[in-house]
Every structure is written in structure tokens, then in C-alpha cells.
Length: 48
Image (cartoon, rainbow, N blue to C red; front, side):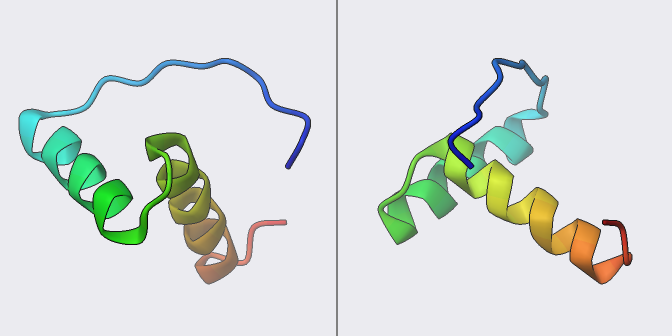
């Protein structure tokens, strides 16, 4: 995960609020929350 690339996303107000709350709850960055969510979704969908 050290090969980081800059990207941007647009979220609804609710999506942004949830992202902020998850980051705060787990004490990690919002980028880390997105990385975890993407990886879990990919695993769930059997995407390598």
C-alpha cells in the first residue's frame, strides 16, 4: 500500500459524514477508510 496515487471522489453529504465518522471511530485517515472499503468490496465480489 506504499505506492499511493492521488485521486478525488465526490460524495453525497451523507457519504462524507459516514466517511468522517468511520475515520474518527477507528482513528485512521479518510483515505485509509476508503482503501479498506474498496478492498473488502473487491474481496466480497471476488475481484483480484
